Length: 370
Ligand code: HEM
Image (cartoon, rainbow, N blue to C red; front, side, top):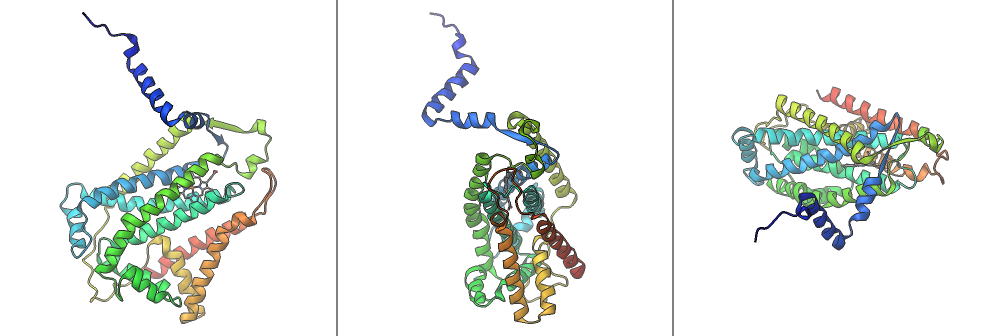
């Protein structure tokens, strides 16, 4: 007997049936309903909402290019040779390496912009304190990602910058032994250090980062986007918003496309360089300095060391820096308010001071080393 196509089997009905089958088992409808109802406030500061998404996009770029690099990277005595092969022999290896390195720097920059925009929009206030703290945790992990990744090519620059970087916390009482035993794996940066940094970079940090990012994003979904104080002061009828799907999500994707273009241009026009292989017997090249995101801390310690020379100065520097960091983390506890719209403490000046200090110390740091 001849079989006829019945409309029941058209593709959209099939998709619907599959969806109903999955939904009946996993109860996903509430999530879809939440997503379809999600709104994003629209006002003159709305563009700052893109920065969290930019961080997320850059993280995905890092994961994808990192996995590709791992196909050819060999940690161990021939780490440098493997990076040389990736850069000069493997097809498009130079591009993947360049994208990974540029995107890492852009990601840390984007995380800083996101943090300061969240700060100035007062988006850390109740009930978003955990968003602030989980974000600070992500920033800390991003910086350790950068520091540990920097050593992996084992070229001259990587070797000496890591040596300088590890020497800083070592000045603290009791830390020398810990840094040596846990991080460096000996008295000198060597293959034991590389093995530890590699494990940190590809296993430990991703294992910490992924759940923390999950918590951060869940908190954003739970609380929605915060309104800056200027918008909160307006009556509800005057506030505008757009649906997240499809309006804001499309804009997010347009921004990601721009970011991808920026990375492509940077990676193609300024391919990431590889120095000569590290040689511990050689003297450190002049002007060796940490990456730009550690420069302000490095310079603060240097300046303080000039005022209070010796170990005491370094100790005071690290102590002051820790205090500043704790104050920054504790901002949501000082700037409290019990209801939306109520005026909290004015922390804008404090934020501006921190921002100016970070930029000024970074610039002074570069002027001194270049
Ligand atoms: C890799 C690091 C990070 C990623 C991937 C990330 C991702 C995101 C995303 C996608 C959003 C929602 C969109 C937006 O409001 O921008 C968001 C919001 C938020 N983030 Fe982050 N973030 C990161 C780091 C940070 C840092 C360092 C802080 C602050 C210390 C922070 C604090 C917040 C807060 C408080 C919100 C809520 C903002 C609001 O309600 O408008 N995040 N984050």
